[in-house]
Image 1 (cartoon, helix red, strand yellow):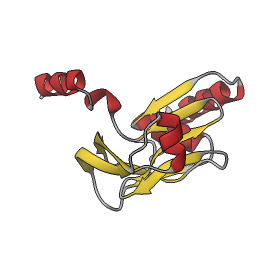
Image 2 (spheres, rainbow, N blue to C red):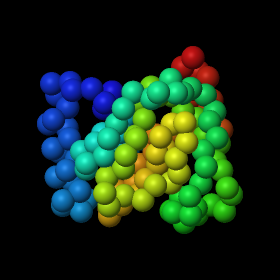
Image 3 (spheres, rainbow, N blue to C red):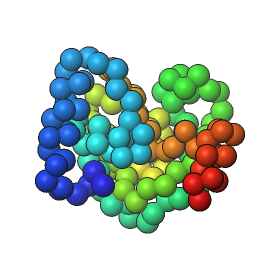
Image 4 (spheres, helix red, strand yellow):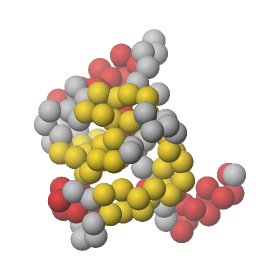
Length: 132
């Protein structure tokens, strides 16, 4: 959980800050989304709406439509998390805000999402079913 103060977390947050300063490409999924946002000045909290799990419908901002090259107003994608990004880093642009907080963002050399796109494809769903 990126909302807690685990002893190893400051080192990870510092490393993420370094990657952004060096303008290296950076992608975060779920915990990665939370960690990148926190490292860059955002706020991660325990989600007041509770744990979100399963196929979730997320609203698409204009930025999300551009970055993801999609035209629809919402996107249904698999999710499982108990934390939420309540406040994005200052320079970030939100992909949309809902019961899961800011579900995605882009800025400079990075993008991140609270959702799990890897489980939202036919192959991903087959993998998930085999795990469960």
